[in-house]
Length: 332
Image (tube, rainbow, N blue to C red):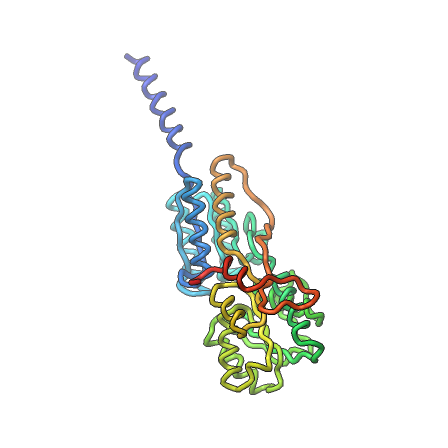
């Protein structure tokens, strides 16, 4: 009887171990917000890949861009729920680091999507657009589009100190051939050609206000760089109200469906399109691989960027708005 009892216990333990190994991997996705079409598409990509690979996806977000506390709470809840991989788009690249360190100390793999932490190596890996390259592309396009005119530039940036905002801004200036900073800097370069800089927080209304203030400061602005297409739409509204919309070139970054439509409609000259669905799908796949093999990903993975323009210019590789609509996110 004793031997049978021992065999039964051993069989039960083996069964439990087998069941544990077969359990679906739990992966967390934490975005900056739930409402931004970029992050909605990111969540769609993660959900589709999780379903395809047999993983369980937990999702959470801050209440608004910049809500670090909300992201920390989401991370803690996901770890408690058994997540072994967490994908995150950090709202605050520095403030989130203690929470990430706690997660990694518990064996959780943490992958940053879209936005890096500061420092970058606070996460196991980064899957993101090369934001500096995205800026370079629109800078090159803007120079060709101005056709030899001296640039009088306004920049509608994100907010101070954010790596993505700095990389796009400085990449734009580099692409134009103006004094700039390298991709590692979180400061914003301001050569003499930039006559006005405003923080838009990627928001349409703040973009419009920023553009109005810039026009008051210098009515001769002929080129506007914006952190994203909502800010670009706000800039266009301000320019139109001032009767200047046909005299100013607007360039942007993101490639959302509304933004591509604004390129097609002539409101934005060009935008650099990035791919949130791809970032998330790659992150989920890496999480499933980690659950199966224990192998973590590391370093930076470029998820691609394409210049979308209504009118091609010589010397700058771009795709038309039809391609942009096919690959955009948000309501088509």
